[in-house]
Length: 256
Image (cartoon, rainbow, N blue to C red; front, side, top):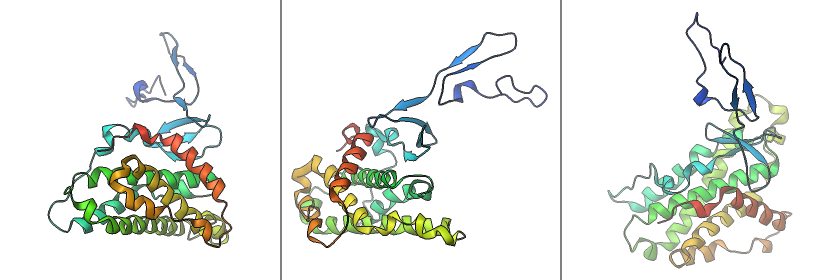
């Protein structure tokens, strides 16, 4: 591939070539070329290979979103503020738009990812939505938050339900032919308590960085799920949330 095919006039671009291991390319009438591994070791100690907006665990082949692409001011990219009236409705649509591109079966299929990785993917999805939401709301009228905390809380809850249902729907659509394994494929998403707890925790974690502005919303999202009858291990989910936050490193994102 490096030497190319002169008859077809094709050759790989070495500047766009990446590998997950150290490689020595031997050429004709030229020196050997060393290509270093493109893997990155994350805070969880695992090595990941970045490709097409995703990061792949080089040992398990599990897939996560590469949120490092949005660090710094890049989280503001494509953030269009609608000022033509109906600000609340526009905000709700925007929040749904923040989660829609990353509610894909690749991230939530148990044949690809473990339950823990799927939970991390969902948690990080909601974190990124919260980051975009803060930056969007900060561009609206100064009094919007003070006057509409309850409405913002309803937008948060609606967005969580929207993301959850969208993932379930896309998983069912992607696996509609494989009826025998459908229940296994949706096993994680049948535990709605786990998904909703993780989502509320994710919004609280990001909004807490602007606590004075979002204090009422944070307090409402902190409702104690332990009071509900549930078999969910919330201590375990707390550990998942901490690991997800370490991987995405939300402190590197710009918040207005």
